[in-house]
Image 1: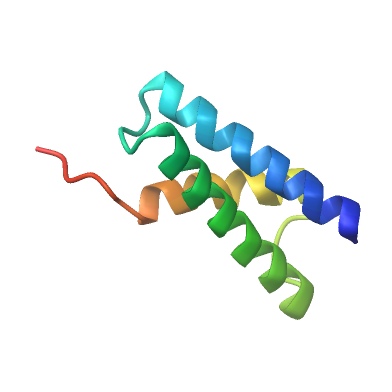
Image 2: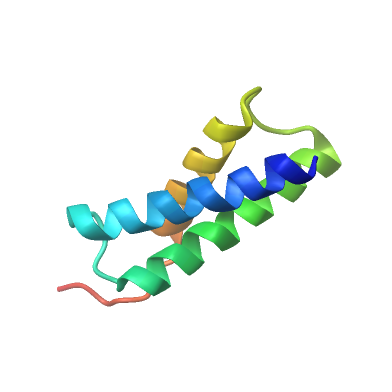
Length: 78
């Protein structure tokens, strides 16, 4: 269980960094990484408590990180 949590954090950090570098978001690198890690933690614990999610822990981390970046805007766009 603990290695899955660490892997989730690492994958979420990579997704946050790549999304900022590719231009998908304009929040800042650190802010995007924090948003992704928060979304991944939330989805990880929902998966533990309710069993809701995909079979792969890596796919859960990627989908929840991208979802958190879409849901939580920190930079107002024109």
